[in-house]
Length: 481
Image 1 (cartoon, rainbow, N blue to C red):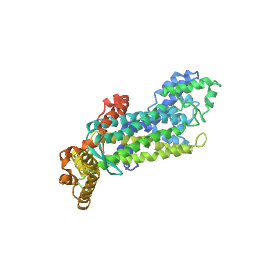
Image 2 (image 1 turned 180 degrees about the vertical axis):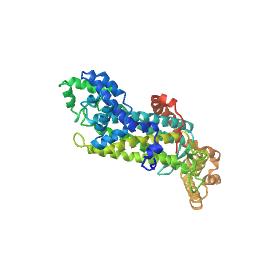
Image 3 (image 1 turned 90 degrees about the vertical axis):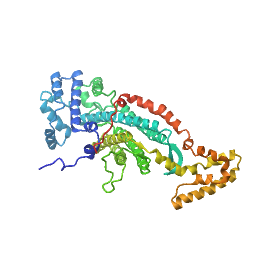
Image 4 (image 1 turned 135 degrees about the vertical axis):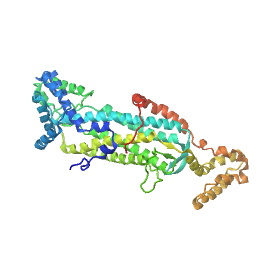
C-alpha cells in the first residue's frame, strides 16, 4: 500500500516555508500562469487584428485553473516537451481555441514570463517580511537603547556599547537588504513577446511585416501581465543576469540573518539574551535543563543554504552560450524556488525570534562588573590627576593593582577585585567619593543611546513608512515546528 511518506519531500515545503510562498512556486500556479499567458497573447493578437474570436478567448479563460496534471504528465512522456504537453492538454479542453493557442510563441514565452511573474510576486511577499522584522527590532532598540552591555572585538570584551545600539547594527544590514530587494523588484521587467531567438521574426510574419504591430503586441502583453516595460532585447530567454541579481540580493539577506542569529547564539551562551522558549519546548533529549537557541540555529542553517545558491545562478549565467542553452532549466527549477523558500522560511523564523527576544539585565550587569574595573583605569587616573596627583605615579599604582586583580581572575577563578584594591589603597583617598560615578557603566557608552534615536528616526522610520499597511496588520508568528 502506497504512502505519502515513501517519497522525498523538500523540508522547505513540509517544514519551513509559508503556504503563500509555496503556492507561488507550485505547479498549480505555474501552469495556470502559462494558460493565462496564452489568454493574454490571444487577446492582444485579437486586438491587433488577427483572426481570433472572443468566443475562442472566452473558452480559454474558462479553463485557466482546471489543469489535468495526469493528462499533461502522460503527454510529456510522449513528447518529452513540457510546454507542448500542456498546449495539447489545454487544446483538448478548449477545442474551439486549439488553433490559436501559443500562436507565434516559443516555449520561453510561457516559461520565462511565468518565472518573471513569480519572481515579482515572491519579491513582493518577502519585502514586507523584511520590514516587519525591522519594525520589531526598532521597538527592541528603543526599549534597550540605554542599557549598557559589553562590546566585543575579536570576540574579546571591549568598550561598552548598549543592547539597543547592537540591535541597530543588525537593522543596518537589513536596511541594505531591503534596498537591494526593492531595487530587484523595481528593475524587474517582462520578457514579453520575442520569438525563438529574440528577433520577433514569427510575429513579424503573423502581422505581414508590420513591425509597429509587433511592438504593440509586445507592449500590450507586457501591460496585461502587470509590468510597465519588457526587456528591450533578449535571446531566446531573458538574460540570466536577472537571476544573478535576484539571487545575490537573497544571498546577501542570508548573510545578514546568519550574522544576526550567530550573535544571538553567542549572547544566549552567555545567558544575556534569549530567543523565545515555550513552556513545553524540549531543549535536549539527554539534558532536560538545556534551552538551546534552535530558532537561531535554524536561521543560520537555512541562510547558509541560501548563500550557496548564489553560485548556481552565477555559474548558470556564465555558461549560457549565445542565444541560449537548456542546461539552465533543471538548475533554475531548484535554485530560484529554493532561494525564495529558504529566504521566506528564515525571515519567518527571524520574525518569531524578534517578537519574543528576552534580555537579562542582571546577567549583563554581572559581566560588566567583571570587566569594567579594567576599563575604568584611565578614568581613575584622570580623576587622580585632577585631584592633584602625579599621572606617572598613578599609572604605576593602577598597573600593579590591575596585575594583582588579573591574577585573581585568571589563576584562582575569582571575581575581579580591582575596585576593592583601589578602595583599600590610601593613595586613592582623594577620589574615593567619586568611584561610584567613575564606575557607572552608563558613562562608558558614549553616544550609543543618541545614535539609536538618530538612526531610527533618520534611517529606519523612512523605510518603514513604505510598509505602513503591512506593519499595521502584523500578527504573532507561530512556528509549526
